[in-house]
Image 1 (tube, one colour):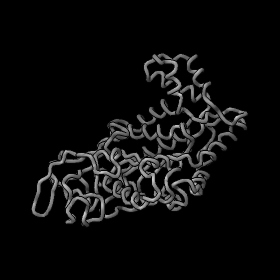
Image 2: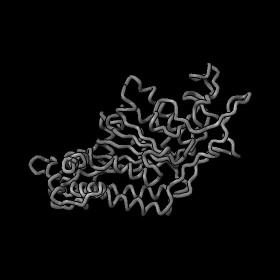
Image 3: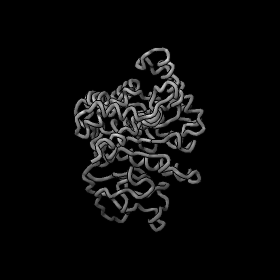
Length: 372
């Protein structure tokens, strides 16, 4: 099934309905409008009452959206938008989406048979469904360097041209975008406005939340309504959006299971999702240092899949190094591959089974051998 032909229309009859406003309550006085509650012509093409959208939201969270090449015409009853490229489109890449995604996962992601299977089936099934009942919500768990961010990049690249740089993919990093506990109320309001505006502009928007384990407890509940089984909220449907959460929460449990299999002489590929998915959700729910702590997202079963990323072994590091060599245009030198892999540190201390940083630093270590 191809993933092409999905359009997000913001126009009817060639003219936008509604007008862009700054963040805030519908119809209320907004900063910069002289207290009159009028739409602001400097903002780019928000959709729906009181909402705001951006074509470059990932770069400008909490500030005014970037210019969207809108042309404005002033009328007696306020501002209207015309000729916004005639329509806002967010079409998927063409081709056999599932096959392309599987190829990327098989050739670029190593040691993660569970993540590959879950993500491939979840995404292909969701995108192929013309009328999903709720947004797709994935929660990726594991130690640093196991591939969580990398998979998010692969997903984005397989859905939208430009990948993470697409206008319809929005990345939030907890320590960057939500750093101060004292501003939690402001963050909630901004987050809700950001999601509402961007989904209004493109129903197939993708939202990625990194460092969920560092997010203030309860903040993520601000977006709970958008993940639930509602046909629409205030005229906006969120059922085709995709939410991806990245977290270290539960990594200890994942490691325990993987280590038990290794010590029992079993192959890691024998590990099943049922061996750890429930434990992952319980671990995240009870982790006071996680944004999921006592979260209604877990309590209400709004997260569709808890996806474990297993700790990587020595052989997986060598796979990462080979791919990186090839991407730089070098022939694979097995001597250098082994030397870089051996420089990594492993745990447990006695058995040295798993890399404590995954593949995260192999790329910088490789620089040493190719430093001009």
